[in-house]
Length: 386
Image (cartoon, rainbow, N blue to C red; front, side, top):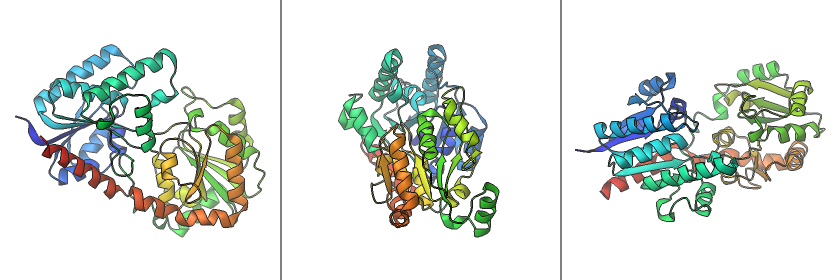
């Protein structure tokens, strides 16, 4: 017999299960669900078990297209569903989506939910795009409900006719997990911490620091950002880059790398586990990414009191409201980035009008508790219809 309150959450890699849904597993457990976490094996899967207090099962999945290994993962997940008999399977990330939704459908799981948080296929072309389109349609076809985590994604799915509108729903105001605004708060960083970090990074009184947080790759708009900063010519402006490079997957242009290396006002600190201190010594976020699901970085920066210059893409253009808590610029446009950076760093009155609204814009719409409660209500509503 199916366990009425058993819920399987499945992601391709354990890091997603740990970070994308942090705290959510425990919240659902505390509200009457028996939660089982499923992903590929890894240290983070064990951390989910300990941190969230739930059972976990490892299931080998690859992020690339590999038919034989994918079929094996599908078979194993089908068997897991037959054994565990959950009422709800809720998948995240593309590969876990197809494995989770198809496996759950074949196993007769009554409620099959898939959250869409960004679509890599948006940048794909040719045969690869056709394959990814087919997989996306199959995933949605097997799901009973599909949750785009942003209104822009909802519109993209409708435009591409991946599924019928009645299957689609945005939970709360978007975002897969909201943001813990008590953790991402400028008050959590002491004056001493800030001063020590400023000294370490060579940031002086009166400097205007633009920060980027994310992978230093072409897809994130780093080539355009560095080109814009190179031509900015504002003596007090600095650019702080927080994140690791992926030279083998999406390398930066040689001239971008050269500028980063030679410009004394560009500060590179690599990947940082805790980004809050870096936000605390900065004035503004610049995030010119080409595509996103619902970018946590933009919410994190806002919660820390930073307005954002963001590209006009899904998610970013929902979190940032033009002229209220930031500026929205066209994608892949170094000139527009530079124009916004120039205005913010020289017109301090305008910048201040955006800064004072930055945190309130996040707390009111994306506080974690709001997202969690909305999802719990959705689960409860779906269970009530069985």
